[in-house]
Length: 86
Picture (cartoon, one colour):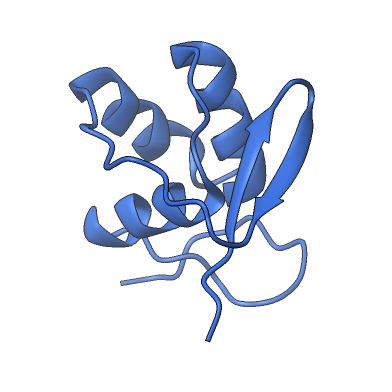
């Protein structure tokens, strides 16, 4: 099974098949950014915005994992940017 990392770099998304991305130490500001914007921005766009903000590539999977760890659950469906009711 291949593990794909989708990252935003050089103004476009790149799919890495074998490259491992270093573990990210999330800052308080990054966590707060995800908490504030997860309700109305797709995870892919959050990864793009954070990559531009911090100046290093951040993968879609890393953003999704952190969002889930923070207890923020999105509704399922393509293009839906709403949170699940708790």
